[in-house]
Image 1 (cartoon, rainbow, N blue to C red):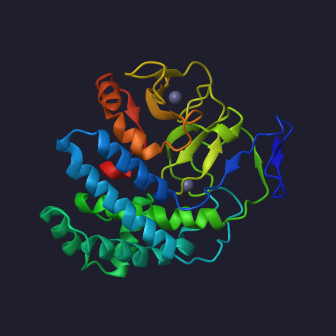
Image 2 (image 1 turned 60 degrees about the horizontal axis):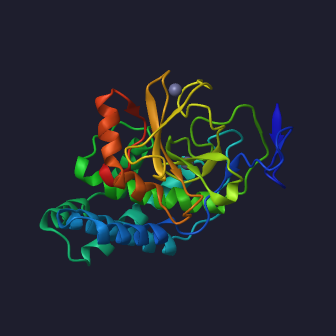
Length: 291
Ligand SMILES: [Zn+2]
Ligand SMILES: [Zn+2]
């Protein structure tokens, strides 16, 4: 059994440089806005209004995140470490901050009418919706509310994760779900600072956790994982597909360009998702910008 200590967050008994958990740092929405702006420049005219909405939504989350003041979280003894009950009270204000920022922008009428409808939601309802997004509630949520709710929840959870001090814990085979909040990964990544190690990135709090490259993100398969792309080997965004459980996850190689963003690159490679869906491959986590 391996162990890592709070002092160094390094697995004992394995390669010394492996950090099993890497907490997010800084405001994740800042570079995401820039990557969406880049995307818009090269995108066809027909996509500009959609990308513009993504930019405004991310920009609003960036400001709500910057203004959010939170105490460092107290953690559970075992994963998932973040306590939802401690974080959820922050959610309604962050959500309202985002809605207010968007209301001040020039947006399509259909977006404006969703913003108006959401302005009447009570704190109680908003928290019930957040619980549903976390998989703990059964409230029906209007589909058009989902991107706004999801990005507000992300702002709260990322901020809390950035403030956390990792606990002492024992790691046997790595985690399937996020060790901080329990959500599924949005993608796996190779980052230049991580010694060629593959990490999974949480779809909610953006914590990264180490997972050996040849293991499936979803099932116990440690055999062959296929790397697929429609644009050839040079494409930074591919899909890791498991022949055992037929689940796949996007894989982003940032070793050549650390600025690439998992959400933006995911949206830029949706053709790959359509192809895999035709082959009955399943994806376990949804990009919030498509909710
Ligand atoms: Zn998480
Ligand atoms: Zn699998």
